[in-house]
Image 1: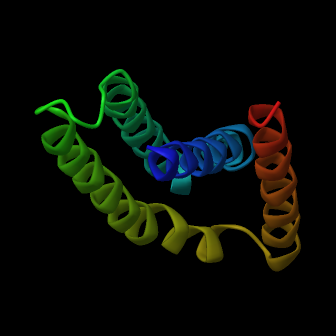
Image 2: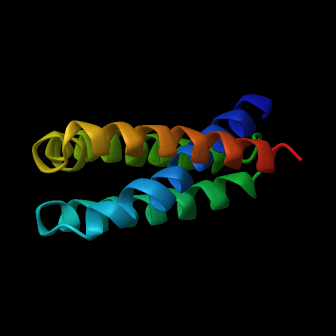
Length: 118
């Protein structure tokens, strides 16, 4: 269960940092808007399954099926995000903005991790 909590914490921080830094900027540009909106829906689905999973004890017979569904959602989201969202960033934003977004993302992710460890 410790491993699950750690994975959940890291995925939560990563997703919230994307939602705080990256997606708002992507939504401002028509070339990346749809990809950001889609990624936000993937995040909502992931949070939904993750919260249901967190409510169960690992010995519950539903825990493993929910974990498998959650894992599938995460893998599908990563594929979609890499193909449709991240692939468009290089073509849409200049190098300076990409570097700023990267720095802001890492700072937000670190801040969220620190908040969640309190």
